[in-house]
Length: 309
Image (tube, rainbow, N blue to C red; front, side, top):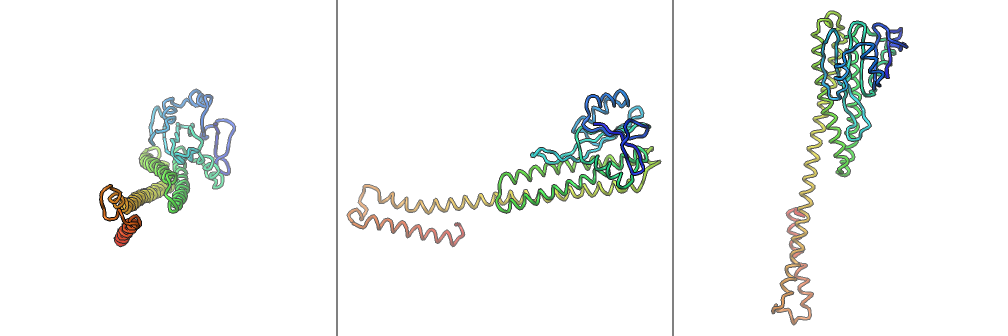
Protein backbone atom coordinates (compact mmCIF):
# COMPACT_ATOMS: atom_id res chain seq x y z
CA UNK A 1 0.00 0.00 0.00
CA UNK A 2 1.31 3.41 -0.96
CA UNK A 3 0.20 6.82 0.32
CA UNK A 4 1.40 10.32 -0.45
CA UNK A 5 1.53 12.96 2.28
CA UNK A 6 2.35 16.63 2.16
CA UNK A 7 2.37 19.59 4.51
CA UNK A 8 -1.08 20.95 5.21
CA UNK A 9 -2.63 23.50 7.56
CA UNK A 10 -3.00 20.82 10.25
CA UNK A 11 0.11 18.70 9.82
CA UNK A 12 0.64 16.04 7.19
CA UNK A 13 -2.33 15.39 4.92
CA UNK A 14 -2.94 12.95 2.07
CA UNK A 15 -2.50 13.95 -1.54
CA UNK A 16 -3.71 11.86 -4.53
CA UNK A 17 -0.41 11.70 -6.45
CA UNK A 18 3.24 12.39 -5.97
CA UNK A 19 4.28 16.02 -5.53
CA UNK A 20 7.74 17.49 -5.02
CA UNK A 21 8.85 17.31 -1.36
CA UNK A 22 5.94 15.05 -0.41
CA UNK A 23 6.37 11.94 1.73
CA UNK A 24 5.87 8.63 -0.08
CA UNK A 25 4.85 6.14 2.61
CA UNK A 26 4.89 2.55 1.42
CA UNK A 27 3.85 -0.40 3.63
CA UNK A 28 3.81 -4.07 2.54
CA UNK A 29 4.60 -3.14 -1.08
CA UNK A 30 3.15 -5.10 -3.99
CA UNK A 31 4.92 -5.78 -7.26
CA UNK A 32 3.37 -2.67 -8.81
CA UNK A 33 4.52 -0.57 -5.82
CA UNK A 34 8.03 -1.93 -6.27
CA UNK A 35 8.02 -1.04 -9.96
CA UNK A 36 6.82 2.46 -9.13
CA UNK A 37 9.75 3.03 -6.78
CA UNK A 38 12.34 1.59 -9.14
CA UNK A 39 11.03 2.84 -12.49
CA UNK A 40 9.25 6.09 -11.62
CA UNK A 41 11.13 7.46 -8.61
CA UNK A 42 14.42 5.84 -9.71
CA UNK A 43 15.49 4.74 -6.25
CA UNK A 44 18.48 2.34 -6.25
CA UNK A 45 17.42 -1.31 -6.43
CA UNK A 46 20.10 -2.27 -3.88
CA UNK A 47 18.45 0.01 -1.31
CA UNK A 48 15.09 -1.70 -1.85
CA UNK A 49 16.65 -5.14 -1.42
CA UNK A 50 18.50 -4.10 1.74
CA UNK A 51 15.28 -2.96 3.43
CA UNK A 52 13.60 -6.25 2.50
CA UNK A 53 16.08 -8.10 4.73
CA UNK A 54 14.31 -8.44 8.09
CA UNK A 55 17.65 -8.67 9.94
CA UNK A 56 19.12 -5.48 8.46
CA UNK A 57 20.88 -3.37 11.10
CA UNK A 58 20.38 0.41 11.59
CA UNK A 59 22.77 2.29 9.32
CA UNK A 60 23.13 5.20 6.91
CA UNK A 61 24.46 4.97 3.38
CA UNK A 62 25.02 7.47 0.56
CA UNK A 63 25.06 6.47 -3.11
CA UNK A 64 24.85 8.83 -6.12
CA UNK A 65 23.19 11.49 -4.00
CA UNK A 66 20.62 9.05 -2.56
CA UNK A 67 20.52 8.61 1.20
CA UNK A 68 19.48 5.29 2.73
CA UNK A 69 18.70 5.35 6.45
CA UNK A 70 17.50 2.17 8.12
CA UNK A 71 16.04 2.33 11.62
CA UNK A 72 14.65 -0.50 13.71
CA UNK A 73 11.05 -0.08 14.83
CA UNK A 74 8.99 -2.23 17.22
CA UNK A 75 6.38 -4.64 15.92
CA UNK A 76 3.57 -6.42 17.77
CA UNK A 77 3.14 -9.81 16.13
CA UNK A 78 0.42 -12.44 16.14
CA UNK A 79 3.03 -15.14 16.77
CA UNK A 80 2.56 -16.49 20.31
CA UNK A 81 6.17 -17.71 20.41
CA UNK A 82 7.44 -14.13 19.85
CA UNK A 83 4.75 -11.56 20.74
CA UNK A 84 7.02 -8.55 20.12
CA UNK A 85 9.84 -8.07 17.66
CA UNK A 86 11.58 -5.38 15.62
CA UNK A 87 11.78 -4.79 11.88
CA UNK A 88 13.72 -2.42 9.62
CA UNK A 89 12.05 0.77 8.43
CA UNK A 90 13.89 2.08 5.40
CA UNK A 91 14.04 5.78 4.54
CA UNK A 92 15.31 6.75 1.08
CA UNK A 93 15.55 10.35 -0.05
CA UNK A 94 17.23 12.64 -2.54
CA UNK A 95 16.39 16.29 -3.24
CA UNK A 96 12.57 16.43 -3.63
CA UNK A 97 11.96 12.68 -3.19
CA UNK A 98 11.37 11.17 0.25
CA UNK A 99 10.29 7.53 0.64
CA UNK A 100 9.68 5.40 3.73
CA UNK A 101 9.44 1.67 3.12
CA UNK A 102 8.32 -1.12 5.45
CA UNK A 103 7.57 -4.71 4.48
CA UNK A 104 5.33 -5.20 7.53
CA UNK A 105 2.29 -3.32 8.76
CA UNK A 106 3.20 -1.40 11.92
CA UNK A 107 1.15 0.74 14.28
CA UNK A 108 3.77 3.46 14.48
CA UNK A 109 3.30 5.07 11.05
CA UNK A 110 -0.50 5.73 11.09
CA UNK A 111 -0.20 6.90 14.70
CA UNK A 112 2.62 9.27 13.72
CA UNK A 113 0.53 10.75 10.91
CA UNK A 114 -2.41 11.33 13.26
CA UNK A 115 -0.03 12.88 15.79
CA UNK A 116 1.25 15.40 13.22
CA UNK A 117 -2.35 16.40 12.51
CA UNK A 118 -3.18 16.83 16.21
CA UNK A 119 -0.06 18.89 16.89
CA UNK A 120 0.10 20.62 13.47
CA UNK A 121 3.61 19.23 12.90
CA UNK A 122 5.05 19.72 9.43
CA UNK A 123 7.97 18.33 7.47
CA UNK A 124 10.72 20.95 7.51
CA UNK A 125 13.29 18.96 5.54
CA UNK A 126 14.30 15.35 4.93
CA UNK A 127 16.50 14.95 7.98
CA UNK A 128 13.86 16.65 10.14
CA UNK A 129 11.32 13.97 9.19
CA UNK A 130 13.89 11.23 9.81
CA UNK A 131 14.45 12.50 13.35
CA UNK A 132 10.72 12.73 13.98
CA UNK A 133 10.28 9.12 12.85
CA UNK A 134 13.12 8.09 15.15
CA UNK A 135 11.41 9.92 18.00
CA UNK A 136 8.13 8.15 17.24
CA UNK A 137 9.86 4.75 17.16
CA UNK A 138 11.35 5.37 20.62
CA UNK A 139 7.91 6.29 21.96
CA UNK A 140 6.46 3.07 20.57
CA UNK A 141 9.27 1.05 22.11
CA UNK A 142 8.19 2.49 25.48
CA UNK A 143 4.51 1.71 24.78
CA UNK A 144 5.29 -1.92 24.01
CA UNK A 145 7.59 -2.15 27.03
CA UNK A 146 4.62 -1.23 29.23
CA UNK A 147 2.63 -4.08 27.68
CA UNK A 148 5.56 -6.44 28.20
CA UNK A 149 5.75 -5.38 31.85
CA UNK A 150 2.06 -6.27 32.28
CA UNK A 151 2.71 -9.71 30.80
CA UNK A 152 5.63 -10.22 33.19
CA UNK A 153 3.42 -9.35 36.19
CA UNK A 154 0.67 -11.69 34.96
CA UNK A 155 3.11 -14.57 34.51
CA UNK A 156 4.57 -13.87 37.95
CA UNK A 157 1.11 -14.11 39.57
CA UNK A 158 0.51 -17.42 37.83
CA UNK A 159 3.87 -18.76 38.97
CA UNK A 160 3.11 -17.82 42.57
CA UNK A 161 0.13 -20.21 42.46
CA UNK A 162 1.92 -23.08 40.74
CA UNK A 163 5.03 -23.37 38.63
CA UNK A 164 3.86 -24.54 35.22
CA UNK A 165 5.88 -25.02 32.06
CA UNK A 166 3.51 -22.72 30.14
CA UNK A 167 4.20 -19.76 32.45
CA UNK A 168 7.95 -20.35 32.35
CA UNK A 169 7.74 -20.52 28.56
CA UNK A 170 6.00 -17.13 28.56
CA UNK A 171 8.89 -15.60 30.47
CA UNK A 172 11.38 -17.14 28.03
CA UNK A 173 9.47 -15.63 25.10
CA UNK A 174 9.44 -12.20 26.75
CA UNK A 175 13.16 -12.50 27.45
CA UNK A 176 13.73 -13.13 23.74
CA UNK A 177 11.71 -9.99 22.91
CA UNK A 178 13.86 -7.94 25.27
CA UNK A 179 17.00 -9.09 23.45
CA UNK A 180 15.56 -7.84 20.14
CA UNK A 181 14.55 -4.53 21.73
CA UNK A 182 17.96 -3.95 23.31
CA UNK A 183 19.86 -4.73 20.11
CA UNK A 184 17.61 -2.50 17.99
CA UNK A 185 17.73 0.45 20.40
CA UNK A 186 21.51 0.29 20.58
CA UNK A 187 21.63 0.30 16.80
CA UNK A 188 19.30 3.32 16.62
CA UNK A 189 21.46 5.11 19.17
CA UNK A 190 24.56 4.64 17.03
CA UNK A 191 22.58 5.81 13.99
CA UNK A 192 21.59 9.07 15.70
CA UNK A 193 25.23 9.91 16.42
CA UNK A 194 26.06 9.33 12.76
CA UNK A 195 23.19 11.57 11.61
CA UNK A 196 24.39 14.34 13.95
CA UNK A 197 27.74 14.47 12.16
CA UNK A 198 26.35 14.70 8.62
CA UNK A 199 27.29 18.13 7.27
CA UNK A 200 23.98 18.61 5.44
CA UNK A 201 22.07 17.92 8.67
CA UNK A 202 24.28 20.09 10.91
CA UNK A 203 23.46 23.19 8.88
CA UNK A 204 19.68 22.88 9.32
CA UNK A 205 19.38 20.66 12.38
CA UNK A 206 16.71 21.32 14.99
CA UNK A 207 18.79 20.97 18.15
CA UNK A 208 15.74 20.75 20.39
CA UNK A 209 14.27 17.92 18.30
CA UNK A 210 17.62 16.14 18.26
CA UNK A 211 17.83 16.38 22.04
CA UNK A 212 14.29 15.00 22.41
CA UNK A 213 15.18 12.03 20.19
CA UNK A 214 18.27 11.25 22.25
CA UNK A 215 16.35 11.54 25.55
CA UNK A 216 13.50 9.26 24.42
CA UNK A 217 15.89 6.73 22.95
CA UNK A 218 18.00 6.69 26.11
CA UNK A 219 14.89 6.26 28.25
CA UNK A 220 13.68 3.37 26.08
CA UNK A 221 17.07 1.67 26.27
CA UNK A 222 17.35 2.11 30.04
CA UNK A 223 13.79 0.82 30.55
CA UNK A 224 14.56 -2.21 28.39
CA UNK A 225 17.71 -2.93 30.40
CA UNK A 226 15.80 -2.62 33.69
CA UNK A 227 13.07 -5.03 32.55
CA UNK A 228 15.72 -7.41 31.20
CA UNK A 229 17.54 -7.43 34.55
CA UNK A 230 14.26 -8.00 36.43
CA UNK A 231 13.33 -10.82 34.07
CA UNK A 232 16.75 -12.48 34.36
CA UNK A 233 16.61 -12.30 38.15
CA UNK A 234 13.10 -13.73 38.14
CA UNK A 235 14.12 -16.62 35.89
CA UNK A 236 17.11 -17.40 38.15
CA UNK A 237 14.88 -17.26 41.23
CA UNK A 238 12.30 -19.65 39.78
CA UNK A 239 15.07 -21.97 38.60
CA UNK A 240 16.30 -22.12 42.22
CA UNK A 241 12.73 -22.70 43.47
CA UNK A 242 12.24 -25.58 41.04
CA UNK A 243 15.57 -27.12 42.06
CA UNK A 244 14.70 -26.73 45.76
CA UNK A 245 11.25 -28.29 45.27
CA UNK A 246 12.86 -31.24 43.51
CA UNK A 247 15.29 -31.72 46.40
CA UNK A 248 12.42 -31.61 48.92
CA UNK A 249 10.46 -34.24 47.00
CA UNK A 250 13.48 -36.50 46.65
CA UNK A 251 14.24 -36.17 50.37
CA UNK A 252 10.64 -37.03 51.25
CA UNK A 253 10.61 -40.08 48.98
CA UNK A 254 13.94 -41.26 50.38
CA UNK A 255 12.66 -40.94 53.97
CA UNK A 256 9.47 -42.87 53.14
CA UNK A 257 11.54 -45.58 51.45
CA UNK A 258 13.74 -45.98 54.55
CA UNK A 259 10.71 -46.19 56.88
CA UNK A 260 9.06 -48.81 54.67
CA UNK A 261 12.29 -50.78 54.48
CA UNK A 262 12.26 -51.44 58.28
CA UNK A 263 9.11 -53.62 58.44
CA UNK A 264 10.09 -55.26 55.16
CA UNK A 265 13.47 -56.27 56.65
CA UNK A 266 11.90 -57.66 59.84
CA UNK A 267 9.26 -59.56 57.89
CA UNK A 268 12.01 -61.03 55.72
CA UNK A 269 13.91 -62.34 58.76
CA UNK A 270 10.83 -63.94 60.33
CA UNK A 271 9.70 -65.34 57.00
CA UNK A 272 12.74 -67.66 56.75
CA UNK A 273 12.33 -71.41 57.26
CA UNK A 274 14.64 -71.51 60.30
CA UNK A 275 13.91 -71.54 64.05
CA UNK A 276 13.24 -67.98 65.33
CA UNK A 277 11.69 -68.57 68.79
CA UNK A 278 8.23 -67.50 67.61
CA UNK A 279 7.32 -70.32 65.27
CA UNK A 280 5.23 -72.05 67.95
CA UNK A 281 3.82 -68.89 69.52
CA UNK A 282 0.13 -68.33 68.59
CA UNK A 283 0.72 -64.55 68.77
CA UNK A 284 3.97 -64.60 66.75
CA UNK A 285 2.46 -62.81 63.75
CA UNK A 286 1.10 -59.97 65.86
CA UNK A 287 4.37 -59.65 67.79
CA UNK A 288 6.30 -59.21 64.55
CA UNK A 289 3.77 -56.60 63.37
CA UNK A 290 4.09 -54.72 66.66
CA UNK A 291 7.90 -54.77 66.59
CA UNK A 292 7.90 -53.46 62.98
CA UNK A 293 5.44 -50.71 63.86
CA UNK A 294 7.41 -49.56 66.93
CA UNK A 295 10.75 -49.45 65.13
CA UNK A 296 9.19 -47.58 62.19
CA UNK A 297 7.57 -45.11 64.63
CA UNK A 298 10.95 -44.48 66.30
CA UNK A 299 12.50 -43.87 62.87
CA UNK A 300 9.68 -41.48 61.98
CA UNK A 301 10.21 -39.47 65.20
CA UNK A 302 13.95 -39.25 64.52
CA UNK A 303 13.31 -38.01 60.96
CA UNK A 304 10.80 -35.42 62.21
CA UNK A 305 13.24 -34.18 64.85
CA UNK A 306 15.90 -33.64 62.18
CA UNK A 307 13.37 -32.08 59.73
CA UNK A 308 14.04 -34.81 57.17
CA UNK A 309 10.34 -35.36 56.65
